[in-house]
Image (cartoon, rainbow, N blue to C red):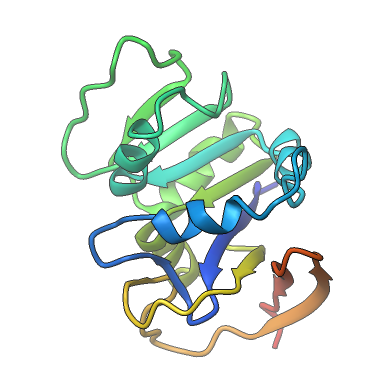
Length: 183
């Protein structure tokens, strides 16, 4: 049985995940409005995840945050080029140059049941080959005007089934969808 593949990400209202230079200052500013202890369901989501797959750009951005936020969760960093990992990272962080299908098949065969995919290009690659099962997008109430988009042009439509909307008093809105592969 194939592992379930999920996306959990935040975007600006106009659909950007970062500024053109990769900056997340707008997200940091928005997070200042979040009450202490509120994580918009992220902790619960991460408890359901067996493995996280991210692209190299996302990995480099996460490293800039300081402490490694994923503990001993298995993390695969996708890159065509070799990566030198800091000694401070757990041994559960690995590199792969596999395509999404091969990686998902391998992780499923290793017993992984739930994969979290993060990073714009990586999400786009997994969506393009039909591997994403569900998407949760937290929309932040800010317009950036330009930046790095979550979604890119597609070869064909990807139909979604709305499964939930949650609003937060501090202005965030979460949209949850299942990818409708039977449409």
